[in-house]
Figure 1 (cartoon, rainbow, N blue to C red):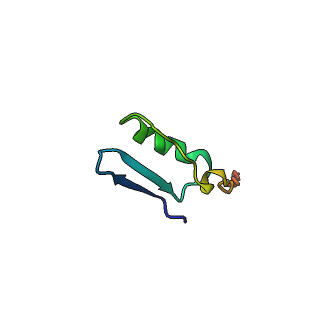
Figure 2: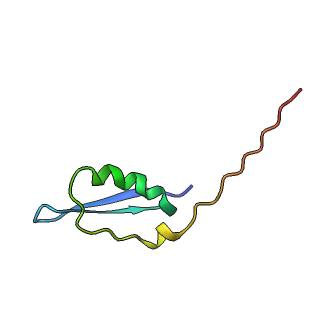
Length: 65
């Protein structure tokens, strides 16, 4: 399992920068939405992980008679 983390830096002028790591694809947007609701967005930059795809989960169910 991949490690998921959010690095948060509070700059001397009060601005906050954060980086989401270990989350591939658009799944990081839901994490970002929580942080973005706390203030005004000045700049957004997607990392390479954003453009990677999470592997699909395949589940097989069988019904025993």
